[in-house]
Length: 153
Image 1 (cartoon, rainbow, N blue to C red):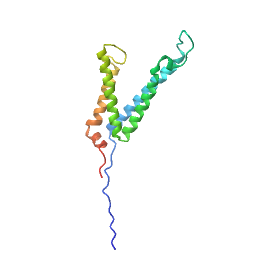
Image 2: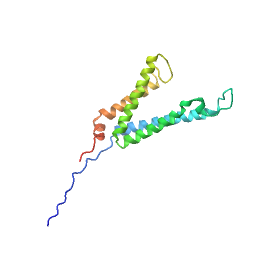
Image 3: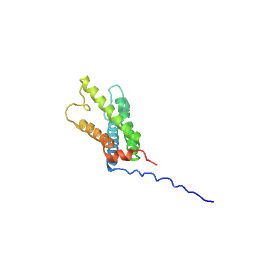
Image 4: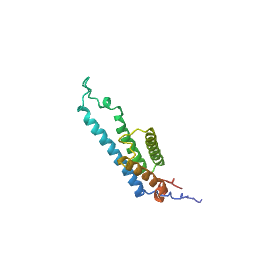
């Protein structure tokens, strides 16, 4: 009686390129920034008291304050997804950049001016450029494309 042992073809090991690590670290830096801004706003909750009463709830002063920890959590999840080479993280990052860019363009077309959405060179314009470059790194560079390609049998 003969025994036949079949060894399956070894799977291609996916390596983590340095460019993907850099983009993931950038996402973690943005997470830290959003948490820092939230913390600074939270610390200001005792500085200004409305004239009609002692309201110390920061969400009363600025209802959108909860978005900062939410965005921080989103960027943490994206960073972990990129480190794990998840195509979903790459796609979500692309959608997030497209959404922010669309909001910026809509804001410019409305004619209003604000600190975050300015036309002149600013920190936000630099951040948008860095985001677009980060997404381009994930889709264009050969090492990143190969890392996110599905493993073959």
